[in-house]
Image (cartoon, rainbow, N blue to C red; front, side, top):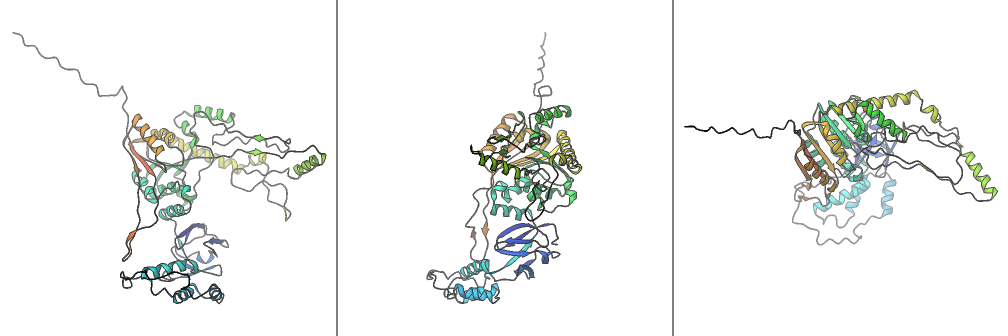
Length: 510
């Protein structure tokens, strides 16, 4: 059922959009504007027509028939004698606008366009279906509300912005889940910078049963695609986040880890990889002074290329005249209340009221950092991180999946010891060179078997009567996948490769 507060996929033709169901909220998609109020409570997969910014449920077979039947297929005809000189259509733009003003439906407009087209009857049935499909995208206002699934989400990202999911195709993702042996009651490590798509796929396979450790980059885990699956709250209890820049502290005792983190904090970097914000923000800075915060990373930490922007406060130069000095001083006095965006995703601190009325205000930073709700959230995050660290220290995880935009070499070296023997791992990368580097390192180091580096290849076929063929447009590559099985390395003390001493031959005496 379509329920308020959940996320759904809106399909118009071959275009998908992910939205959250909310009342009195206007949705914009493919030049359509509408509200989802009338769709709440109806089953998923329902088809609607957009009229006057409202949704009206229609039958699934509504619209123009765009696929010819087997009886209509005529393979002997062709479009050889048809000349497209823009003179075949008798209706003008003014006529179409007048029909729309009179309230004509999309089907009626398309029917008139086909009847007034001199070449429509001479076209083959395939060309006629293509013509109707093209006009239907423009004049038909039908949408379908679907439940977000792994295949639909992956295809949506691949069509709109494939770089957000590292060009991860659905067939490659299915191979990762198969190679990783993901199932219920398993303990899996996931490194995902693909909008949480891999994380959601793993959780869907596990069904909320087992243990899932998410290794994330940055201050907080990003789970945009994961939230689209609409998992119940009980599923989140089985997932534990762990920051990427603390991977070197997994196998350290707690006292040593606290000491290393204390040194990092003294150097200006907190345990979450963010700069220490306890320093007061100076409001009245001198002119022509550039304030720049420099990030200092631990020497032994595994850190991906940082995307945090350097906070710079630059002020314009002040001329020697007294009038400009006074104007600069007055400008600073009027904008003395700075805007600080603090963690928690709340409002901005704006002390100056707007012209329309008083603005929303957040307490100053000194008061906000002592807020009990904020301290409680920090305590819960630290507990989750410590739980994930304790699980990783046991070294009995069942699988490892890596799909990130960083070099996977340091991540593999840090996380492979957390797997139990005879467990599988899979590493995805859009490019081949990083995986070749990891392949050579693992072969030289040992401890893995059945190491394979593969490239996934997919070709879609159109299966229709009389016109079965490959699709005209396809993706060039689905990325590369490195997989293997972990084994236990024997040490010299327990090695049994030494040959037993030879027995002495008996000498015969007379």
